Image (cartoon, rainbow, N blue to C red; front, side, top):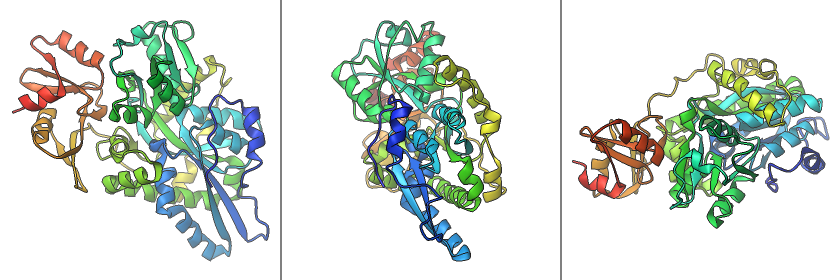
Length: 446
């Protein structure tokens, strides 16, 4: 079931009446032998694909439920509801109309707060994808913009989705740059697609957004990275939340979902190119953009485990939302529940993300090549039929499109940076180094 997307800024009270018009949750069973499970997801927020887009296309959840149904004599029906942001998913969950949902870390906290407030508590039971430094969020400007640093945003209009992880990145980054987010910039609350249009039209000077919007706009030549969220060095992630009542009434269904999510995670990790192509087909996003985030060296690492560092980061997010008036307080320890995952997939674990390497995807190929250095990538690109080339930022490790990165030559080596400011900072501190355009870098590489 695909329903109309709703703006993040729409008040919760306006969202609730709409919830009653949609398919019901797990309790709806006209004959006692049919159970409907409603899953809210964000198809184009591709950091959630193992609990949404990819999972849905693979049919693993339905398979798990069918196996369960053969044991207990129940027919399970899954309804998938697609949204642009986490806010309407939370509204539906608190109305008892969505059973399981996936969203980013900041929306998860709002989910916890609204659930408690409206007496429909929720629990965080798994993670989809994460980046330990915060590289999933980026501030971008229009190509050719005179803005080079965050300080240049003073007095400017910046589009973001208030209450999202991208908004949290913007607030923290502005403060580190010595700016007051409430006074020094004109922050406009918009859905990602609206913000992208505003940036293109010149009615917004910058856009702070989450995966996959920054990469998409950069790939299309419609934006240039101004700030890499990984400079904050604070983890960001997306996760799976469930209605507490549903989890208690239907633990076997939640177990089935978590097992299915684990299978989808394995599929993505073992077949990253095929998974990127599948998600691209389902969402309309370019596969090259999906792979930037979800690929073998991608910005996101996929692992359902509720890692301690991610839970700790969630606690650090609470004051940011509280200051914005979006929550009063959230008991993160009470919200996080690792027991269902341990029960559903005991002993499951994945290694932490390692340092990203340069990667090349040639046209017509179903696999990619990795390289130990950016210089080796440049050599391989020369004269090749390139579909996409990726390179990690020399400082933050955030993967970026090689032809959109800022390249620096110095000390007999090539380095790449997501932002111009990052490259200039490096050049200032390293005598003899210089910024070189991508085409020249490819030509000069030897």
